[in-house]
Image 1 (tube, helix red, strand yellow):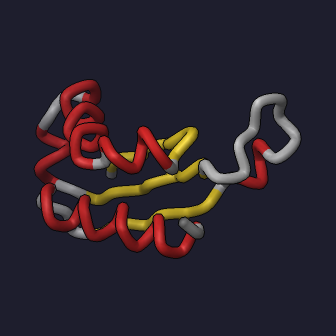
Image 2 (tube, rainbow, N blue to C red):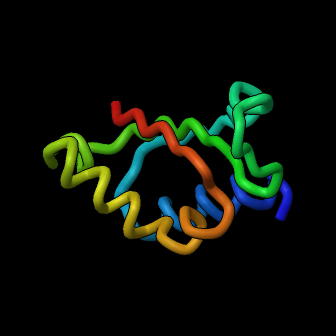
Length: 86
């Protein structure tokens, strides 16, 4: 899977499962390019979400919801994810 396809899937899944006002997803894989154990088939994403639903939850609860929503992608295509909730 390439990065653009992964970003599209992540965006769609979050939009379908969580009430959001805005989402931005950035590929940050280049930051980890030379790290030992880096897998070129797994990506590092920065996800910025504006969501009243997530803001009402605690940080752990909101992250759990996102991780549950992206379970398959996290297991297979995402090495690291940074989540920012606005």
